[in-house]
Image 1 (cartoon, rainbow, N blue to C red):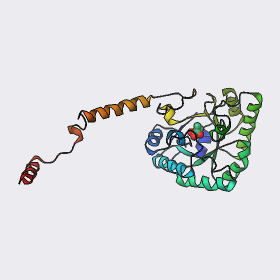
Image 2 (tube, protein in one colour; image 1 turned 120 degrees about the vertical axis):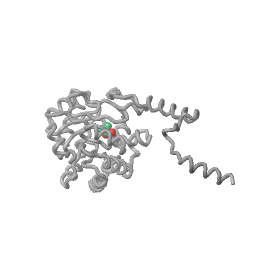
Image 3 (cartoon, rainbow, N blue to C red; image 1 turned 135 degrees about the vertical axis):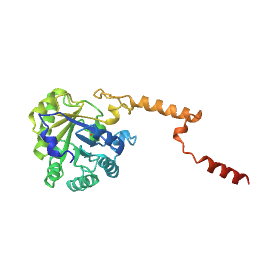
Image 4 (spheres, rainbow, N blue to C red; image 1 turned 60 degrees about the vertical axis):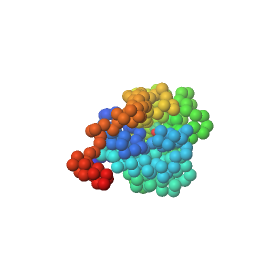
Length: 278
Ligand code: KIV
């Protein structure tokens, strides 16, 4: 049996929660085998899988496809899928309909961006049994339209708003809250004052867990290079060099080698040649 929302909630104050984004079967299988607690089908897929400038163009059909690929791979982790821009902000009915689509595609829970203003939507989803992960601090679906990527919660007023947002999300029934690019002091304060686990990205070590975009931590996505990312591999270099070697092997007939080929019986070959000659 895979991890449940209850398992993740119970990890608070006991064990740090590991989260990584996943969008495809192959990488999701590897992350799940590695024992990651939560596979997040983030709308960052729009950037790292589809090459968009930001997450705004991502559609429900795309998120459903990514979710279903991750769901085919998962054995142990909890799967959370992002509701994309304008799939839930319009009204509660849209939020329920679109969350239902992600759950049917294989997600165990959905994530949506927003604070106090999203409380009613979250309550409606939780009431009908759809677990919700909140997301405050930098909210790429909306802050990209106004101020771009900026650290959140650096002034007393901004920090107070974040604290109020976190409390509103908790009251609305989220099982977990993501903080994106929140100053580490504020992330710590909120983590200590809510009962649900907090998951940080660029928000310091005191959150209950951490999330990174898989392409960032594997060093595969070079368009942006945020300070909060730790690169555990430098795969883009390795991949380019492997593909260059492949190209060279083809050109110099080093590939395919004998062990990569299939052969026919020599006697049969001789008979064939003879028949062709005749
Ligand atoms: O879409 C995403 O990858 C996310 C994480 C940055 C938390 O929302």
